[in-house]
Structures are given as structure tokens and as C-alpha cells.
Length: 202
Image (cartoon, rainbow, N blue to C red; front, top):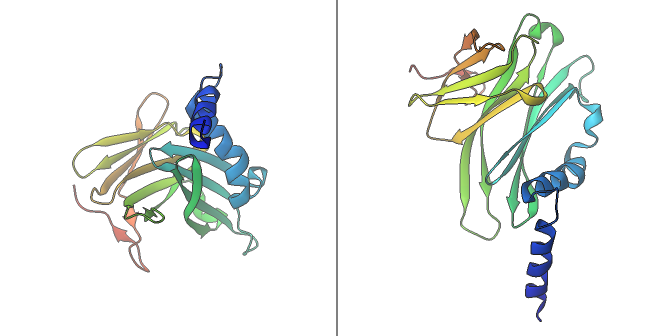
């Protein structure tokens, strides 16, 4: 029996173990083995959340800025999954002052990222709108695309993230309370250069 067949059988047996689905195993391995190598201990972060998608995962985090005393940061890290192996992708962060967040319901960042398949002609281009929920009255976040599509994130772990292909534009960001009432509507600003550029009119 060749090694490839043995490996396949072992993988199938592992996936059949009771009480743990394949997706749970993938997520557990990601949290326990992959993230500590990139972000260190998550206990050092104020807020920390993961959003999984078909090609990988996006990690959102906030904490003290290690390079500037008195400042905090909000950042993201993108990981690509390929045949059970995780590959670190783009990492980005922004620095902010605590007083700049006073009275805000959320804070967010909008940027583009891509996955480049190693040794293959595969590139996935995405636009990411992600952020932090700052107010306990904010329960979920909605993003409205230029074609009218509405995406929603329940704000698990007090972070949110929306990932779309680069073509669509984010036109609105709505903050909802527990009853689904809109607390605030924002027009996302995309930082295509050194200065934020307002989103398109929709």
C-alpha cells in the first residue's frame, strides 16, 4: 500500500472522529498552531476575532501599539489555506489615540489584499472592510454594496469583517442595536493613497 493511500485513509479516519467536525478541526489547528507564530499570545490583545472563508481566514485584533507608547492599534492578518497548510499573507494595522475614539460606536479600516498561489498561476484579489465595535449598544454591522447587496456580521468578539471581490464597492456601513434599529450610517472611506477617499455615491 503506497504512502499516499495510507495518508488518505488516516485523514478519512481523523475526519470521522465523533464530536469534532472537519471545520472544527481546521479552526482548532489554526488557533493553536498557526496564530501564535504570527501574532504571539492573543492574551496580550484587547480584542481578537477570526472570520473564516473559502480560501483561508482573516484575523482582526486590537491592542497597545508596541512602537508608540500611549497609542493603540487595530490590525488584521490574512491567512491562505492550501491542502491543509496555512500560509501567512498580508498584515496591516493602523495606529490611533484613545481620545479619537471617544463617542464612536465603531472604528474600521478598508483595504485591498490578495492571495498568490505558490508555484501556480492563481491570484485572488479581495477588498476588506473590518473593524472594532466600541459601544455595548452596537450588536451587529451591515455593509451595503454598490449593487444593493447587504452583508451582515454579528459582531462576535466585538470585531467585524466583510470580504468581497475587488470589483464591488462598499457604499454604506450601518450599525445596528439588538432590535435591528440603525444607530448610525457611515459612508466608508477607502485609503487608496496617503489621504482617505470617500466611497462612491450609491
